[in-house]
Amino acid sequence: MAAGRTVGSFGIFSPELRAEDPGLRAGLREAAAELEELGFGALWLGGSSGVRHAARLAGATSRIVLATGIANIWFETAAELAAARARLEEAHPGRFLLGLGASHAELVARYERPYTAMARYLDGLDTAAVPVPADRRVLAALGPKMLRLARDRAAGALPYLVNPEYVARARSVLGDGPLLAPEVSVVLESRPDRAREIARGFLPHYLQLPNFQANLRRLGFTDADFADHGSDRMVDSLVVWGPDEVVRDRLAEYLTAGADHLALQIRQERGVRTAPRQEWRRLAGILEPAQ
Image (cartoon, rainbow, N blue to C red; front, side, top):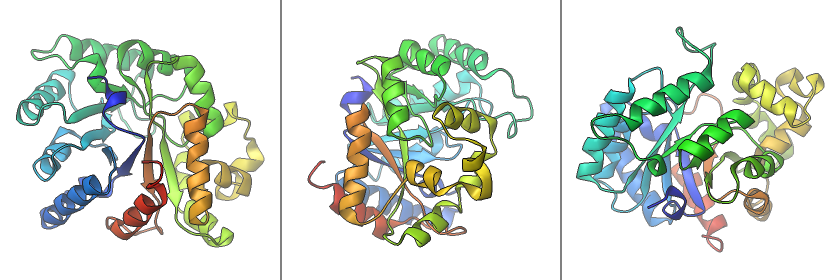
C-alpha cells in the first residue's frame, strides 16, 4: 500500500524516541504506544535513525507507521539497510517506512554529490536480495532535483525546516500523487519572546548548513534574516507557535498548501532531551477535530 494512504494527516517527529540509553527503552515503548492511542499516524524517528530504532518500538504498537527521519545513506550500505528492513517487515508487515537522506558535507567525512549518491543508493535498494519497494521509502528532499528523484523513485518527500510557501512549490514539482510529508517544528508557547527564544535554541545549527541556506534563500530570506540566530520573520515563518487555535490554523496552512501529512516536532528548551509526552498530549488535543 502506498505510504500516503497509511500515515494519515499527522505524525510525530522525535529524536527522543531513538535514544540509545537502555534504561530509557521501556519508557520509549510506553510513549510510542500512547502516541498510537492518541491518533497519530506515524512516528518519525529523528536524527540519523535506523531500522533498529523502529524495531525497538514495533512490538509495543500495533498499527502506527514507524519511519526513519532519516536513515543516513553514508552510515550503512544499501544491502545492509535492505536486509535489516526485510527482517522488520517479516516480523511486522507493512509497519515500516524508510526515510532516507544524504546529510551534509559538513557532517560526513566522505561526502559526495548528494543527488548522485542518493540515486546510486536507490539502485542498491532496488537490487538487494530483498529489495525495498519504492512505495515504502521517502527521501529527505529540499531542492527541485532531489524532489524529482523522490517523485520518480520513492513514495515521496520528507522536507525539513520549511514553510507553507515551500510546500506549495514542492507540490508543483512532485505532482498530485507522491507523498509530501514535511517536518514542522512546533513550540507550544503563546508569548512571542519566549517562543522565539526556544526556536533560536535550535535554528542556528541548521542556518549554517549550505543545503538549508540555499533552500531558505530560494524562499526569499536574505542575509538580514540569517543574522542573530534568525530574524523574527524567519522564526515565525519556519516555526509554528502561539495559542492552541493559532497552532491549529498554522498547521492547516501546510495542508492547504499541498502537504499530505505533517511530521510534527515539538521543540523544547535547549538541553532538554526527554520525550515531551505532556506536549504530545496537548498537541493531540489541538488536532483532534482534524485527525
